[in-house]
Image (tube, rainbow, N blue to C red; front, side):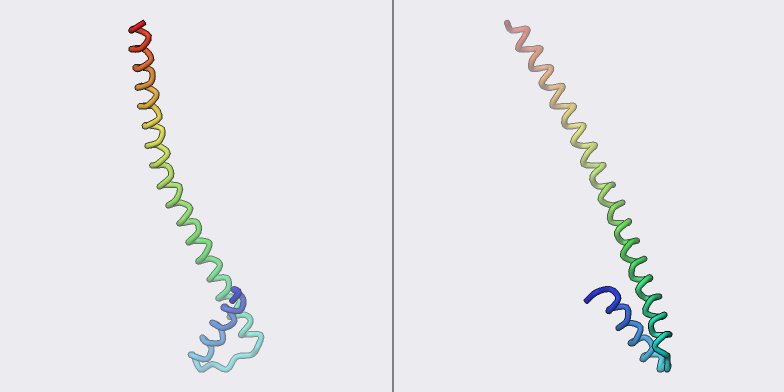
Amino acid sequence: MELRARAEQAARQACAALGAKVTEGQTREVSSIIERAIVDAVQAASRSSQTAARSCCEADEDLAHKLAREIERANIALIANLSAMR
């Protein structure tokens, strides 16, 4: 079900739950408000997920750089030792 249909269904259910007699125009307006609220909530969740993903990746990236530096140091030491054996 697409977003607009869900918002319209929620608007009808909300008006029915309130026992309110509303016009079609009012139902559309309530539906638009609900639709905007859903979009805002999804965008906020998306931003939160992106922030969390960036935080996790930064930690992994930092660890990867540390490992790469340690491997590079070990390779330099190995090359130096092998060169000294010549």
